[in-house]
Length: 387
Ligand code: GLA
Figure (cartoon, rainbow, N blue to C red):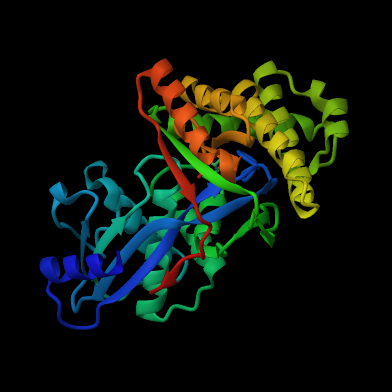
């Protein structure tokens, strides 16, 4: 992929000068969904799939972007003096947002750039192609202009740009996973204080299989922000009766004791998910450390049910995928992953059941929805870097 991006760069922008290449991965979250803006824990891993770039500084203040995933759009031009969100700027709002966010954080970018992008994360699949693009631009800017920012700061700047430039009120999980990923490990991250630890997920007898439902309902952004508001409202009501900073501060017993202080039953369910999912994540990481993969898988299944019933961010297609997965012998656990309303499920499947999993779930899904699913048996890779 690196060679293809370099070649395309030479074709589009010319091959002379100091052209450098970079990579930032996508992510899959194993458990801990919709907890990252509730002060809870998450457990994502970086994939070996991700977004590549070739980039070169310019003498002037122009920015020229070209994506090999959207070749029909050609070169998209803007400038450091026009870093504002524009609907018609499409995907380039993500890189533009990061240029803008660096400036906001005191790292004003002095010169324009030419950048060619190419990704192998299926677009809109919920595997964080946009977060990987943000983190990628962060790594490029640090390297090209010697900005003194850490990988975690790059993740935070990416999140800041997504929140304030692109208007998606996401948490820190996706950018953190893309920046801080580690081969064969998941990241056990406490989003309340960004403390984290790596946990090995080198599963000897099983594989991580991602199933792409190939649907994306356009509720994603709007409903996401609604869920966030519902959790914030529930938190405010709980704070009248118990001294907490976030929903992640509550254990299950406390939640059961205080939940009646949340007036609206829908908000009660949303808060319940946030609290229980956080506790499930803590239990799942302990189970993994004790090599109890079965317990881990059961918690994944419970996570899906909670996302479906209490948090209401699943959709019929993802429910069918998990339902069919749970039927297949050798499936240890399966759940929707990411923000929801389409995208992917993640399953842990015993090695010798992977083929029958793909065959059975694929056939049943197609029969019930008339849609073909895609399957990726994935490897866990390292975080964003210069190539
Ligand atoms: C999206 C957001 C993340 C996280 C997940 C749900 O991927 O970008 O911050 O909230 O949804 O867990």
